[in-house]
Amino acid sequence: MIGLVTAIVKPHALDSVKDSLRSAGISGMTVTEVRGFGRQGGHTETYRGAEYVVDLIPKLRVEVLCGLEEADKVMEIIRSAAYTGAIGDGKIWVVDVARAMRIRTGEMGADAV
Amino acid sequence: MHHKARWVGGAGITAGITAGAVLLSAATAGAQEVEVLAEDVQTNLDNVFVLVAAVLVIFMQAGFALVEAGLTRAKSVANIMMKNLMDFCGGAIAFFAVGYAIAFGAGNDFFGTEGWFLGDGAFQYGTLTVPVTFIFQAAFAATAATIVSGAMAERTKFKSYFVYSIGISAVIYPIVVHWNWGGGWLAQLSTPFHDFAGSTMVHLTGGVAALMGAIVLGPRIGKYGPDGRPRAIPAHNIPYAVLGTFVLLVGWYGFNPGSELAADGAIGGIAVTTTLAAAAGAVTAMLTIWAKSGKPDVAMAANGMLAGLVGITAGTAAVSNVGALVIGALAGVLVVMAVLFFDRIGVDDPVGAISVHGVCGAFGTICVGLFATADTDFWQQGLFYGGGAGQLVSQVIGVVAVAAFVAVTAGILFLAIKATIGLRVPAEEELAGLDVAEHGAPGYGQDVAAPLPPVPVGAARSYGATL
Figure 1 (cartoon, rainbow over the protein chains, first blue to last red):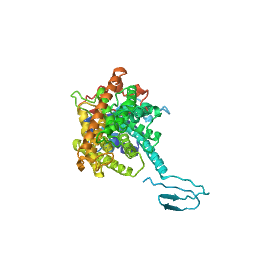
Figure 2 (cartoon, rainbow over the protein chains, first blue to last red):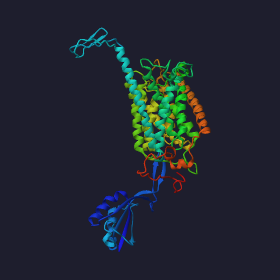
Figure 3 (cartoon, rainbow over the protein chains, first blue to last red):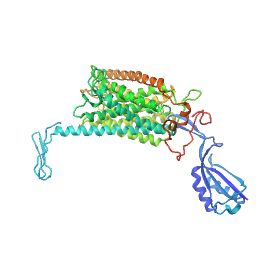
Figure 4 (cartoon, chains in turn purple, orange):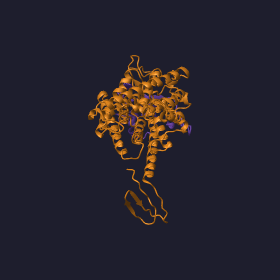
């Protein structure tokens, strides 16, 4: 069984998330730049004296494929690395992965991770 | 200062000063004598200095381009750069063909009629050659023309803007210049109007044309909410805007000291008043917006530096250093108030050109009548120094006359363009950005991800529909 751990984190948390996952032996991750809002609902900025709302805030989406039994550990690693306690720290979720394949070798399932 | 002197080249290194003559011996082989009169040296120095000043003023085109590109949105960045590129080119050719003759040629009190295409009767000033006089003045004409592009940013048809830029450089700006620098009626008032480097001639002219353009165009889609209140449409590149402001500051050392039109002892003092006003304007604009909105806004502080520069341009040779500080400081406050005022009354000027050049140009010109420290051949002592109101009255006459003339002629020009080839791009083109529809390709290539635009306070959270 394979799980996909997806985390939305603050951009500046990337280095500590990456380093923590690597030192825990997690061998791969994918990062994309994303924008969104959650309960925080964006923030306001001022330009030439007028306020405006930036409601889609830049975040990073970190994706890690791992054995499903490892998923809780991965979640906890990411949480402790990305945690500041301030609003906007992000979210982490896990989904089941039906199939996975390593392109180079054609290995399937847990061997592909 | 134009002492007659001789430079003599010969063997050995000796220098001697005899009655009225300087003898310099250079270490060259042979005893060939070359006689150079000090007047010739001065003439060459004047021409070199003013040509270098003209190049600095032309460099201001780069400053305008960067400020305007920075303070507007990424989706129309190629368009604003193209407008800056082409208003210089169209303006330079138009000013060469007819503008220079109208501005400086012999004629009547309102326009000149000699020196078309720099031909017979082309004007030359003092010791300057015709080409040096022309290139310096052409740089100024291009400055007046390019002021307008920022105020009309993000919604004007390119070809319409190009036609406008030829119109102002060929006719409107030259007529205004003839009134004063060309020896016309403003120069013949009982107390002649004084505008040393062009607070009115260049900046008020450009600023009023910008106002007329922005009014005829109307605001950008999304600038005003359903309640009619102005919204922020943030700059896409503050580093461009600040860099452009610095480029303009550097260019102003050609604009103001160069307007002395000679390499003499006055240019240093002019550079000092220019510097002090620029610095004071930036500081007070920063403090004003800081007090009003709680943050030292970068774009507004940059506008403040330009406001100080525009403000000191008329009186740069006539006022004291303290006077320059006061003029710059007041211009910095004034520009913030003016930007917020034009925003409120529905005139959408994305870069603040109307406030910087129009409002502070008028203000700086009037300040000559208040802050001029002493009587000279070119201006009378100002009101604050006990010189009475004579100069002040002439300054007000000049400002009102130029503003009215430009408002009418630029208004007619923009309305005529609107009625014929159209002035504004279609709404869908404006929403998508002008770059692709007007020029074929985006300013920033597809490999550069464009950030999503922010949403003004009170706007619906759906893009495209409002911005």
